[in-house]
Amino acid sequence: MPPKKNDITYHALRNEIIAKQFRPIYILQGEEPYYIDLLADLIVDNALTEDERDFNLTMVYGMDADVKQVINACKRYPVMAQRQVVVLREAQGISKPGVSIEKELNLFKFYAQKPLESTILVICFKGGNIKAPELLKELKAAQTGIVFTSNKVRDYEVPRLAVDYVRQLGCNIDEKSAAMLTDAVGTDLARLFGEIDKLKILVGADKRITPALIERNIGISKDYNNFELEDAFSARNAEKVYRILDYFEKNPKNNPVIVTVPMLFSFFSNVLLIRTSRDRTDKGLLAQINSQSLFRLGKLKKAAANYSTMACVNIIAYLRECDVKSKGQGSRQDAFALQRELAYKILHA
Image (cartoon, rainbow, N blue to C red; front, top):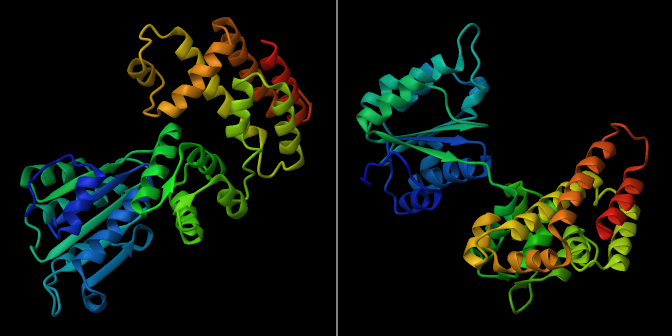
């Protein structure tokens, strides 16, 4: 058995599962569904062979689940196998007339007191933390399982996750390409990693994911994207700024204002933090902007040299105003016209 702990990271739990060090009960919860699904599938794949799954895998979904029946399934013995796996997916969707989700899930507390050693129970609860205090209390007291919380990934963390995932696949990607990719796909990790899986098949002999490869297969231009727009504003390159915005206007589906404005808001907010930070060391500045990327820091430093502190304060105000107006509040102007007006204000701040 693995060491008994109440808190565990994704990578530590993943390594345990791959080493076939299973716990009797897993509660996988949180706002980021990707890691919940990944760990649940990993448990099934490592605990049972394909042949064993026919008789020893029970998969139920919250909306259709009866907790008492799930518990009965957990109490069965495996058929011609060392163990069986019972997975309750979408536990947040458990619905029973007149009975709360909390009360339903608390029924597992009795099973948690003495789970069957040959059964692995996996409860997947998405969208937040599980609300079943009696179950969690019993789980902790009896030390018969583990609670893993999959926290929502922050926007600034996604490019680094993309780089790490690419490297796990035996390929390479630079930070600019990773930023392009995440800018195009967003923070949906399942979709992001799915796109990376596709790109892996298409890489050349150098096994490198490049801006050109992303442009050909993801539908984002390597020259006209939010990442390049940041560079253009950073250098106060008006010609490049307006050329990119013109491309955005001609391709509105892939370049919505509602995405560009928040991106610029985050960028100039970080530039302001760089300008006003007391700790001028790279370590201090990285902590200030909540990043580990020296590449990102270099870009922000360049912008900080071109925009005064007061300019940054004014730009943030302009961005707030544009965001409100682009959503139809206080203005009937076209969103891209507002974006051009915003660009002029930024460049002349």
